[in-house]
Image (cartoon, rainbow, N blue to C red; front, side):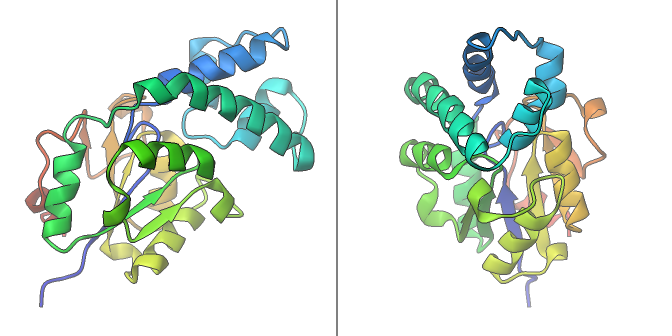
Length: 218
């Protein structure tokens, strides 16, 4: 009997290339507070991180509870307004997911982004019907690099962690997949290979990928 495989995708930088637009939204958000983070600071402290971490780091005090929800809503509303006209899936991902789906692979999305962002992107990128598990930041208590979102995804998909392949673009995201005991493919939209933990392999986009290449990992 063929071993069941699951593939779980992060969203930002993995399904869609949102990071430049998150940077624009955060720049607008921080500029009203007389802050101007550098590109290097964003790369180190924004990509793949939860809003609670990002806001706490850059505002230099603990942001939680009602204040977190208020500030997060302000920044993410800015992001959605800026990004909506530009939503475009990363090259090759639609046909790659079709290939996985046709071959019986179980599929999921596991993002640190808020549900409203995920809903916006899923309304423009036709993937929702193929996904057996969709999780956003509101669905977990602990954020990446904690493995909770990936372990919960595996449970939702009815597979064990060692049956899963994660696609991630950030240090904390790759770490979350590895911490869950899963194989990880590094997507080089935000970082170089040297900036990420060791992955099974790395891709720039999905144009050369197929079900067979994923099956070969097992």
